[in-house]
Amino acid sequence: VITLKNNENSLQEVVLKASDPIAEEFSVVKLERIKDIYFNPVSLGDPLRAITLFPLSTNTDETANISLRGSDPSKSRVFFNNVPIYRPVRASNLNNQGFFSLFNPELQESLYIHGANPPLNFGNSSAGLVEIQTRKKHPANQIQTSLGMASAGVFLTQQLNDENSFLQAYGNYQFSDFFTALNNNPTTRGGELISFGTKDFGLNFHTKLSNKWLFNSFTYFLDEEYMGKAENFTYRGDVKSSNRRFFTVNNIKYVSEESILSFNTLVDNNMRNSSFGNSELKNTIEGYYASLNYKYFFSDDLHIETGATYDFNTTQYKGVSPTYFYALHPDAPSSNIDTKIENQFLEPYAYTKWDIKNGFIFSMGIRTNVPINGQKNYLSYQSGTRYNFTENHFISFNTGQYHSYNVPNPSAQNYNLLKSEQAALDYSNEFDNFKLTAAVYQKKETESHREINIIGAELFIDFTVKKYFRVVLTNSFLDNVITMNGKKYNNRNDLDYYPRISLQFTHPKYPVVALNYTHRPGLYYTPLTNSILNTEIDVYQPIYSDDTNSAQYGNYNRLDVAINKYFTFKKNALLVFATVNNILNQKNQSTLLNNKDYTEEYFDNYTTLSFYIGIGYHFNY
Image 1 (cartoon, rainbow, N blue to C red):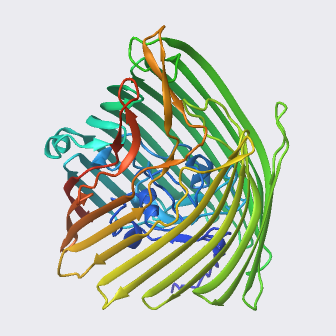
Image 2: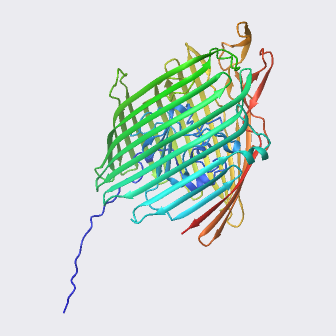
């Protein structure tokens, strides 16, 4: 007789108490993948472009660049799985819409936007911050394919033998023949689009190594080319550019009942080539990043985080550039360039959050640097207070001092330390199908040769009417003043108003229709007062007014329409979509241009009328 006896094995359960960022309570916006990205009429399925619908975005150039609450994009950061991705946009002009980001929304589990006072568990940001986290749980096994007027792509999600491991891989190929032919030589800011071509590939692997150890690895490769016509000063000619980029982000995490220990790394290599007139430049960029982070939960209400980050970057410029900034013709004098700059910094930090039971939440953070190679020592600090009336109704006040290094470009081939002092009061109330947010803020940004003072206010209203009609209304006010040599001027993006209106119809039986209208005053620019002939090269030199930014472009108006229909067939789904950009074909002024001797002036425009259509097919297995 064989008797079976119970053999009970108790497995220790690990509860992750902070699956969301420790500073989530102080983020202004959290974007949902379906609602805020795919159904956003201005995003075209891109996570960073989706941000432009919200009032904290003060982007005015029709690109995916992150401009938050009046600050220049170079002062904000995008963190992907806890590492900074500098230059997070691609250079090709797909859809005649401007630049697209490097990130595929299908990888995304969460996206948080800090419009100001970025939490100091992240560094090197003196304006705002976007935090993107990839998925931690296995999504459904799926193959997605897409085909459009200018692109073809495939996305694969596959669970591996281990139920805690999965793989996501995707590739895209973009081409311009059909798009340029059907859109009748579309113009872009800076000239005319002739052709583009892009190939990119991404691979994301996630696994649970043991009961407490997690590992994630993401690798990305990009190869793109662009050709067009551009006009600058008095020269119009061919512009060519190419970009090759590879980066890999690796994360390993140890999770216990009371703490989380993580180690994050980035290796980033980028090579860019560009030519225009008498300028031909090769730009090689290398970046390496590592961070060690430790979170400890004294209780559900009191958390601390501490750690250190190391950031190393080199940028090299080789080639020729104009000797005279205004003489760009291929026969004009040019000078050799061979410049290599380097920047590295080591920053320890500490951040804490305390949730008091009566509705108050407090946070504090500090971050400093360990001076390397004679660097100047600096200290960043912040504090935040939030009061929750209910779970979805709160008011918060945040203030702090922040530091960051600028991202070099051909016009600014250096790493300069930037400083910003900020204060922001945010309010949010959400119930049923209605959401209201409002904010007022102040910034003082100090650079090597100027000071920028920003006072802003913003309003966001999002509500649903009769279940199927979604209305989003936003408006921003921006008093942006720049001080140079003791004199104050309006900054380029000083905005008395910036309304954006989005209307969306999402009935399941009918196509989804979305309309988005954007309006704002024209940007400021410095007008010409005269020109002088340089007889040595027979080119006129423009003479600008001493009254900086005293002229203004015409008002900006743009209406976009997006239509899509989703069909389901058991495990399969088909998506058909179309967009019409700037449907009223408004000639929105972007850049002042002149004839040879600057006696006549005219304007280049932002995106003109264009359209795009495509299909996507999803298969779950």
